[in-house]
Image (cartoon, rainbow, N blue to C red; front, top):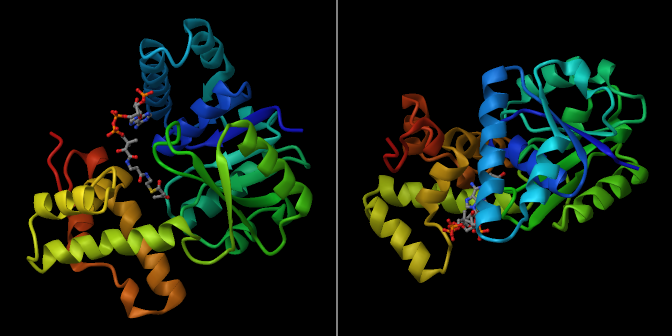
Length: 282
Ligand code: CAA
């Protein structure tokens, strides 16, 4: 029975997960190594909830109650009461492995450890933990409070009890589950990222401008955001790392990251979060 939820990483995904978990009544321990990121994350959660109060989707009492359920901390040992810990750190396998080595000794022996990875092998990540049978992928979409879908992914050793607990937790968050097998980038990003990469090739080859490409896909395919706007929203570094996982893992040249995407990431133009990507946010 999951009551206490730990989250590692107070970035946009970690904070989104913290918000929806608290709104569903779970106690949330939001950990980040950087105290200023926790502060900024809690402010974002507060702002999102205040917007929901203004639009009548949440009462002021519900907002206050949910906020009191979230405790930010830069001390890993504060995750010790957690029944489920979701790692939502940057999409870098070495960093994730380091986190698991640090966090496992803190956890209760029967606690479930999950990753919000958007592309990496669950089976390989599980091998860096002391609990591959209680490890799996719980992949939320961005922005977490708005997007209905969560992908659940088992590793080779994931036990059915772990999967059942994760399913129960995600259902309690009022999300819809889709189950993906443990292949590079699972389902959503296996399909979405090559489309975004192709949009970047379309720009790179001069087929259309940023505006022409995004307008084409918004009005011509009814996408809520154009692919270049969406790439900026996801983060160009994340887009690149997912394309690299697809390219390496599936060994097919159709997944080759567009050189323009590589160049933007090398320039530090990472999209919305850095102030510049295909659009200028400064
Ligand atoms: N955090 C929380 N809530 C947000 C938000 C955010 N970042 N951005 C928008 N919202 C909320 C707004 O508050 C608003 O809520 P209410 O209806 O309660 O007022 C609602 O979303 C709609 O927002 P807006 O009217 O301002 O804007 P919009 O209609 O243009 O919608 C959007 C914004 C929901 C982000 C929409 O553009 C959209 O669906 N875009 C595509 C998002 C998408 O494809 N996400 C998946 C990315 S891939 C992924 O996440 C996988 C991965 O691993 C990389």
